[in-house]
Amino acid sequence: MTLKIYNSLTRKKEDFSPIGNGKDVLMYVCGPTVYALSHIGHARSAVAFDVIYRYLSHKGYKVKYARNYTDVDDKIINRASEEGVDAKELAERYIRAFDADMDALGVAVPDVRPKATETIGKIIELTQSLIAKKYAYQSNGDVFYSVRLKKDYGKLSGKNIDELEAGARVDVNEDKLDPLDFALWKAAKPGEPAWDSPWGPGRPGWHVECSAMCLSHLGDAIDIHGGGRDLIFPHHENEIAQSEAATGKTPFAKYWLHNGFVNVAKEKMSKSVGNVLNIRDVLQAHDKEAVRLFLLGSHYRSPLDYTKDSIKEAEAALERFYKTIQRIEEEWTADIIVPALQRGNAVIDAMDDDFNTAGVIGAVFKEINRANKLMDEATDSGYKRQPATVLPSPPRGEGRVRGKLETIRALCKEASSFLGVFGSTPEEFFKRRKTQTDVSPEEIERLIEERNTARRGKDFKKADSIRTELLEKGVALEDTPKGTTWGVKRRFP
Image (cartoon, rainbow, N blue to C red):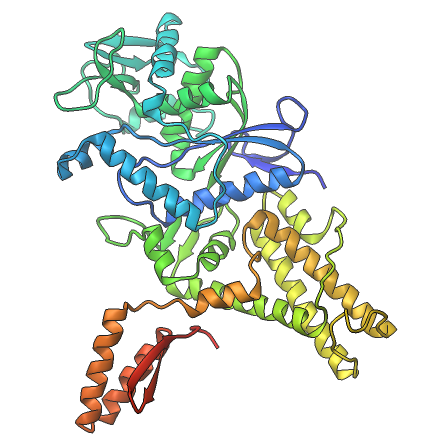
């Protein structure tokens, strides 16, 4: 099956064919604006494109993958001012935090991770080119892009210029010739970061930063450009306009991919609502592999709803998976031989259909169910369940079971290579689960003392309630002659 990708630019699935018609692929994904800790929505985008990167590599493509940091922006400047720190210092702090979160999620490090502040020279050069070609103009130290001069403006978002003007959802700025025009360069304001330029000291606009970083590191035309659905307009639309106008090459990116939003209990994440979930808070409460499985459990273009139950379901699914793998290893073979799979299996078919990770996960668990059924039936038939090293020539029936189990393991291993889940050993997974709890050691000790007080007062109902509360949170108590001890247990039986 040929790899098919849904292209936001054409609004349809297309056969994937790199610009060079070879195996080299250039991919750019918009990264974070680093002014705060990254949330679960950032995780969704990062994991989705990590899987796309891994899968293209799995299919034999040589991918050059760039994901940027926007490290100069109004939000960064405003947050730095609130905290009384330098904007660069704040940005670097959150770059380190983002990198740590990505590492915890198992996201591969892109080949290139450019920063806007390290690309100022290219930004100025790009802006100069647009002025020379009459696509941009300067006004009082600012430089603006003339949207109406790009005749196909709106081709990505499907927005019409006349409709945009009627909607008037643009900033009012007397220096603009047209309210729809956007800033390529902003004149310096007191106390803000600034760089010298032909138009005086200032800093870049947001949209031009990504164009400059992409052009600098990947070239004038790339295969894949990705990001969240919220970036389609105006950010990606403006990237197309300024990049194609400057280089004269169309298309700037052949395929545009956009991931869906993450809602929290069916509500959009919002600081005003107070439901923004930081990645590290989620990872403190839940297994990292389960978080990744949850993020991949829906198609990357679909919306995703985060609830505590949805993460628990992912944890329970992983527990079922690793219990089955453990059973295969302990009961049926010691030295599992994982044969090469033919292309065209269920996980490959799903991924070739616009990176359908939900389909891959479904195929894996179908095989896990099949594995348990095979082992149950073999046991009921009276086959000896001994390691392969003990039975070099197992009975014919048992040999067929071993072969089928090995094929199932091979499919799971292949899926793991690009999903980034199902790759632990059962021992590793259960060890992680045993060291997880939502309760701090201080809180555990406080509740134990409260329970001891209740027991001394013969309030056994309250004492039992505290024990149950802790057990539900993964903490088991044991009463000994020397006092009460505690340990963290797996939260699912």
